[in-house]
Image 1 (spheres, one colour):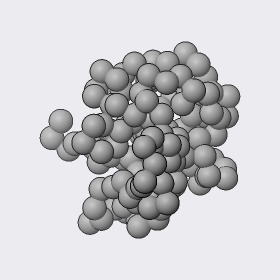
Image 2 (image 1 turned 45 degrees about the vertical axis):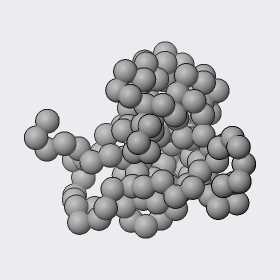
Image 3 (image 1 turned 180 degrees about the vertical axis):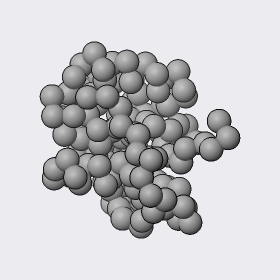
Length: 132
């Protein structure tokens, strides 16, 4: 499955702020961050597992929302892993997000179906640069 980009949809979130990370308070004291949460432009909260960008385990999940996160805690890319976790496509995506400056991959597994994953992607993916 190709990386998904949904900026051709109506501008539902034009006035809303960008998605932002809202770390889980219950894990704040832990030395290793294994979980975090993101607040989408809609205000909805998405819990995610945290992986280093080069950790191939992050790409092994099916039917998940994958977020490429930069060191300044921004989502720089997002995609649906797909129902089969197509290794070659996910490997290309991983290499491209590393080149773009991602330091982590956050994996949201709680979207129950394709429609839920699409809604999460719309809510969390970075704004398209209209000038670029």
